[in-house]
Amino acid sequence: MKIALMDSGIGLLAAATAVRTLRPDADLVLSSDPDGLPWGPRTPQDITERALAVCEAAAAHGPDALIIACNTASVHALPAVRARLEPSIPVIGTVPAIKPAASAGGPLAIWATPATTGSPYQRTLIRDFAAGVEVTEVPCPGLADAVQWADEDGIDRAIAAAAALTPRDVRAVVLGCTHYELVGERIRAAVQQPGAAPVVLHGSAGAVAAQALRRIGERPQPVPDARGTLTVILSGREESLPQAALTYAEGRSLQAVSHAG
Image (cartoon, rainbow, N blue to C red):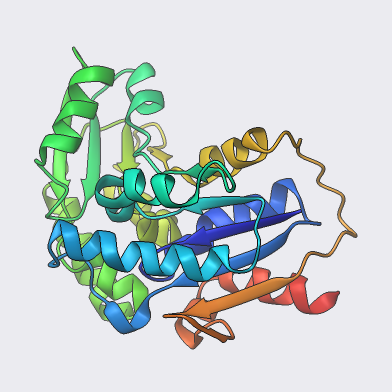
């Protein structure tokens, strides 16, 4: 079994780790576009064109399914990618986990990129899945870029700025960008109030990994001694994981497990 994942950058590490946890035997293809970063300021048409190129680079390796592990690409390019690749390759998009977060009640915060915060896309999700729940949309300028390049000072500054905009009584935070899942515990620590119940984080990695397996009729089989391969594609070139990816536990785990085989 082979599962491909795409993202603008290293945000796909969280979903790839989730796939590897559910199916250690799965071969993984990670396709991203470091040469084209950042995608946020690009036009929707440009994002779609770059996303198609990243997805086609992954599709050339013959995956059984492709996960668009990128909120920006899912918003702008999911229909175009599905039109290009399906039904030969099932395509799974990423949606912020607003529905499960809202089901537990509020108040909750949605941390997202400035382009996504307040967008019609996000407002529609809030209307459809969080009606009647107190929701605060929190823009996080610079956080995704800082995570991408493992800029520790930049991560600290961006998280502190977003935490200052987050109400003190939030019970949950939706991570509306896949990059944020790589620093989830730092986000939790920044918004956690002394004496309060632990803040719950809602990412998308586990859900998209499980959906990918369902789409191809497979089930989780977390056999610890299974070893899947890892193929990394950077802007169309087959290379190794970038150094920044190895600063995160997810990147180190993916590399270590794959090399162990």
